[in-house]
Length: 354
Image 1 (cartoon, one colour):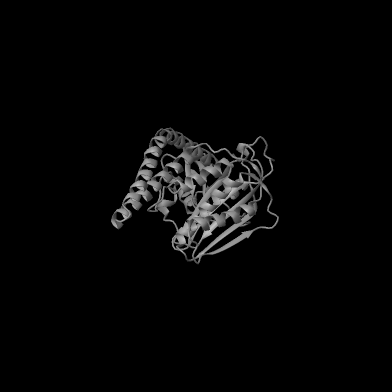
Image 2 (cartoon, one colour):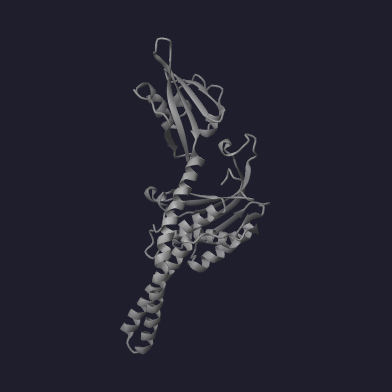
């Protein structure tokens, strides 16, 4: 079955659980599961226990509800039903569910595209209007600076004006880059070379200080179909953010390995479609971490915690990764560091991965 099925007796013991349910909940089938209390089998999944345990107290059971499993980074859609005897008394409950993670990711991409379309219309109109005045301010401040060489106060103020004009201009340029459609120059790309170059680029942007950088690339890593320069921008941005978070002390680990992405039968014509080979790159720092309330917003345009940040760096990274039919995920523990995981298809992605 493509759907998970989970049934319990009235006393809360497990009556039935199919293979798809074990896969979705990331559990290993044990011979003692059937007949054991649900709370024992699902001791690491308390939300599932809560949903099923409440099935005997609710007057109206949920139909087509959703449950987010945060520790597994999955979303399931489920229907809950009671099992009754001939007299109409409930003797058990059944949970029918499906893994909706890929569906939600597609919906999130569509929402992002809609936001980008609206932002693009606005940015195209204001960017050109802003660039000319900013360039004029910078040029005139430079000319004025030459006319008052004997005044240190004036020199300092004019230097600040020029600096702020350059900052505003860079934000406009980043905004244009963000809303402009990405045109990939796809070629056979050596990811090891990309990662080495990205470290060098990051060091040219932000002082590395005493940060230790560990690069761990799996042997036999295949070439991938990708845009070399765009991927350099992705990983140099992530490494730069790690350097800034560490503030000159700590460790950054960059690991690349081969993995496979299990297909969802709902997105393919055949249940026997082979798993797709993927490349997984982790950029992990030992910094202070990202607060939970900010984790869901760091990919939003113009959201930033940096005083001089534009809030477009990570949205551009995500846009480039999406253009490669990949995905980017973030996990963080306060005081222990942050991990960005980029997953890329090793070859042109089939329709189910997109």
